[in-house]
Structure formats: structure tokens, C-alpha cells
Length: 245
Image (tube, rainbow, N blue to C red; front, side, top):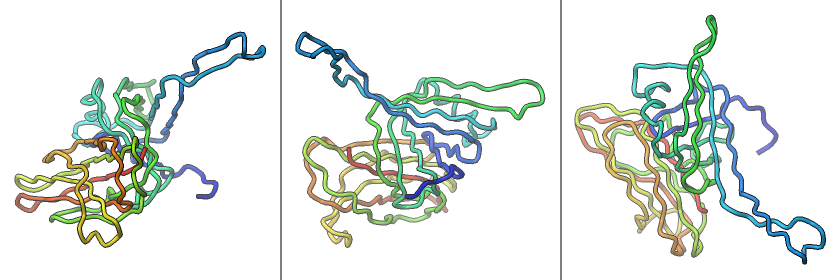
């Protein structure tokens, strides 16, 4: 990816797409520095890495009175933990770079002076590691029947590492609709005999989930998101991201 001007950063906060109501999204990651200076440090401070953390902050234009609006979603999320996924200035298409984590919605602010466009600001702080991966399902493609997404060659999972998966259900329609998404792996891109590695809980409303594998090695290098849909005339919009850390 070449140098870029920020014009289309995508941000998914649990079950809401903040893209059309945000004009600033910032992602930061840091490791605490713990001083370990001693008489053998040759006159220089010596430090060690402590606890790591990540933070996602955003701001934009306030909207309300619908579960998919920023005010309704933010109010419901304050104090709660869920998946947050941020794109690297792209349209969140399959294979596009994604940063995601499980995060606590730690604050939410709204309001300004008379005559200003009503704003919002908010922050989410990580409760899981920040993962650098790829989008595995685009947010703008409606799914009405059982199926599977595009295969991604993310690579094998070494021992001690995990495959992380974030799911954002952004829109639900139909009578008694339900979607159960899962993450499958395969030795190649044919997925002739896929292995299910993670299964999300069945969802029938907007919301988000994030899962990770147990930390044991997985030799398969190809991955995809698949889903089972039921109900009468069901339709779902959802985004998903996968990554190894």
C-alpha cells in the first residue's frame, strides 16, 4: 500500500458501522516501559516491556433513535466489551488490511455550542490483543441463504499463537431470521475437507462477537468465514475480520 490520504477509513463498533458518521478515527498501541536500571547498566536507564494495550478513539456527527445509529449503539455499549474493527483507509473488501480487538467502551461524549453540527466522541480500550489481519467478509454484501465467503491465505498458526475472528452483524431483516457464522480452515484453497475452528453464537439482531483459538498449532494455511442462515425471507449485512497473533 502506497502513501495515502485518509478519505475512507471504516470503523465497526460491535454491531454498528460508524463510517458515515465519523470524521476522525485513531488507533494506538503501546507497551508499558518498566525501569530495570542497575549497577551493570553502564550509566544508562535500562527498561523492560510491561503490559501491552491498544485504544480506538473516534469522533463525528451525532445521530439517534435507531439501533444502528451512533447514539443508540454507544449508549448501549458504554461499560461493555465487544469487537472493534478498523480498516486502513479502504472499503473493507475481502483481503483488505484490518486492525481489530475486543475492547471496553470506556467513554462517550456528545453535545457542543449552539449552531454546531451535533458531535459525538468516544473511546474503546482493548481487553484482548490488537490483531493485524484481513477482512474476510465485506459489510455491503447481503446474505440471504447459507453459504461461505472468499478464501484467504493467512498462513498456519504456530504453537503459542491464536487465530482471532471478529464478527459484526450490522443489519437484520425477515421473519425469525438467524445466522450462525463459523471460521473454517483448509490445507488449500479448494476447501474440499474444511475444519471448523471457531463457531459464533447464533445471532438474530445487530451486534458483535469475537473469538480466538486455544493457542495450539494449526498447520492449515487457508481460512474462510461460512454461515448458516434460517428464517423466512432472512437477510443479513455483516462484516468479519480474521488474523493471527
